[in-house]
Image (cartoon, rainbow, N blue to C red):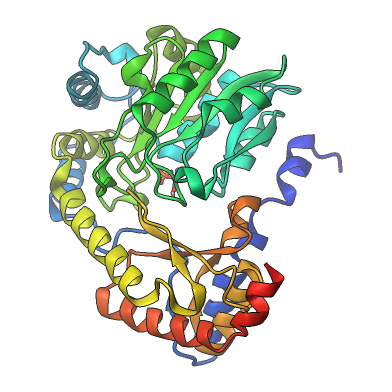
Length: 398
Ligand SMILES: Cc1ncc(COP(=O)(O)O)c(C=O)c1O
């Protein structure tokens, strides 16, 4: 049979990155005690308010076809939220509802880049971005996000990577996996480049409400209303990933272009999910406030237990659900070797940094979305494991 090239382009992306996670699950099936620090899902269930609203809406008959752009009540809530946050009037025509950020990213990228185009994206990046870019035939061009710059995308690095084929600067702020929040001057620099080279800026802001550091979040959309498109959802902010509900925000012109594609993909969303999303959008801190406090506390816990142990260094994330740990001088090999040996020896499963990009070859990513006591136990196991390594050899090897 003949398969379209997109199936080839995406074939090698995906499951290999999750090898440690799958191995931990296998060990669990064999009866081993395992602590999974691989995944970032909020540590609470979706709140009753969301479930009751969706349930009530289903009971009230909100189960038919939806408007292709999104239900009016949801578009009202989104226009209010973004109007207030961006400080300018937003209309229904600035939004399209999607089942989650992931679908929104896919559709938006389809509207921005085509075969032969180049998309600038940070290294490290969230695991699905390469697929999003390759699905439409474009090529990801990675721009290093360096630890010494807090893993924040630097306009000077972007400038070096721009070619006549560049179409999009793909931004993720707050960033997964590093928890970096772009500063206003960096956002301005990125937008200056985008204007000078006529590029789109796609900004994935799924962690917008999980900023626990001191630096304020600045959306590129607050500083440019023509070439910036934002994606977001309730998955992180409201512990509602399984509801699959999100949206994109952009210019009226962009959304008008994208709407037929969204309708072709989805034929509308679910009215009862839209009602629930509208209620959630009007209650941004329902889950996020508690989550922010717990994430901040747990990053402090990981730092207190691991910083300096066998040369480990805990990066101070400003947002998001993860702690990044530099394991370069622990003497247990690179992040991949460290994570594989760690799960075998201790049952603690962490993500090797290389799953997110080359810059993190000597790092591991630890989820903060687990109970404090379990996280503390995992940290003690990681510390003992790291101390068992040959630190002197590690220093020499570096
Ligand atoms: C940076 C980033 N973007 C997008 C997503 C997917 O979000 P959604 O559930 O809204 O599709 C995730 C999920 O982990 C993420 O970390």
